[in-house]
Image 1 (tube, rainbow, N blue to C red):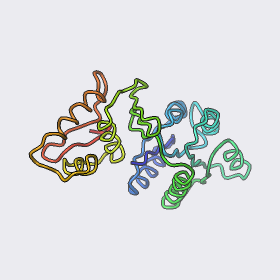
Image 2: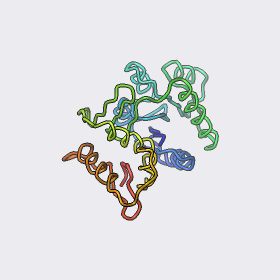
Image 3: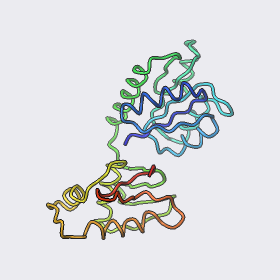
Amino acid sequence: MTRILTIEDDETTAREIMSELESHGYSVEWVDNGKAGLVKALDGNYDLVTLDRMLPSVDGLAIVTAMRRENIDTPVLMISALSDVDERIHGLRAGGDDYLIKPFAPDEMAARVEVLLRRKSRQSPQTVLHILDLELDLVARTVFRRKAKIDLLPMEFRLLEYMMRNSEQILTRTMLFESVWGYHFDPGTNIIDVHIGRLRRKVDGPGLPPLIHTVRGSGYILSERC
């Protein structure tokens, strides 16, 4: 699922952004100040950031400048009541990818987000998957959680990749068996449950918030929300 970080100190505006983007199927996380926004933006675990120009503690220009200095190329849509041409130029030169002036039409904002995401997807294929603090690198074939390496067997890696690509969705045993193993599901086998159990022990270690959940009577889901 596409993850968007909204850094906005005005609650009404933030709720408007979240409501519109979530209606388009995006997962949106909101922070209401520049200091917290800077920390999350520098994590680099988002597909796009909507960024207010004027924020308490750390302003929008400082955040986007810090992101680019750290080589974080996450698309940034700057949103501001400052409509002066010079202000827009400053925002774009600092590293913003687009600049939207308040007040704005929610559907225009969503369209600009869609364009930026489409542009990003054309630039490079996604080779690293992120869910919360879990990272799977498709090229290096590595998995990390909170920067600690997790050693997976090849089938466990394929299973986790499929679950991460379909995070926040309930995955039935049939879906897992046919998509990961490539066979028609045999209701008499417990191979899914065995592999899920092994994967869960490795990914959801002691003291970590669980990501792999059983949905009774349905299957499994990889989710940071459950």
